[in-house]
Image (tube, rainbow, N blue to C red; front, side, top):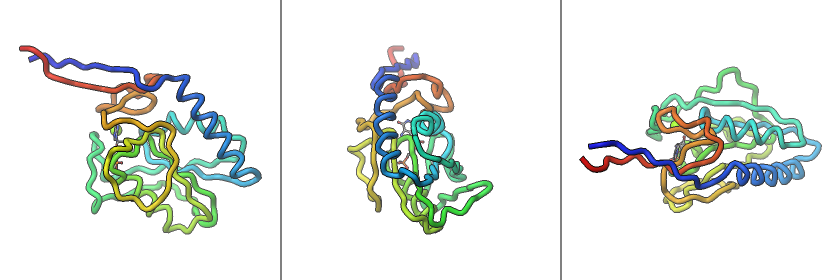
Length: 181
Ligand code: IMP
Ligand code: MG
């Protein structure tokens, strides 16, 4: 049997750029004259954030976290979710924007939200690049998303499959199937 990998463009670089510009305008207006700290879990989100912060017209800090219980396939067990924040600046009384690459079951972002909320920030907003909106989930917060997507697997623009494809400029639907004999 032969393994066949297919990549189908679903969101182009230009569409991503204009959605980010629009979101950055809204955020810059909402937090005008104030500081904002972006909190994000590595690694999928790093390209999204680097484009976003360069469009923001406000002062932005970035605090990355690592999910110590996530394996290479992003499989996590909620009871085991544990973050490592490295050198931590307190988030107390700050405006926080949690940024996620993909909202799927919501397990990881809910754990990150709870982790951030413990520090008692002034305000917490949540932004995701993609939202697998048909997935059933139970989350305790509102969020903004740039693109609603089907329950497929996506790569590119920072998103990986086994650490491949992160450098692609567009976002693709990824399939990997055994075909023929
Ligand atoms: P959740 O906890 O189920 O919401 O999982 C979200 C995390 O799983 C994301 O931060 C991604 O790292 C990963 N993930 C979920 N769906 C995809 C996908 O389609 N492509 C790449 N990574 C994904
Ligand atoms: Mg991954």
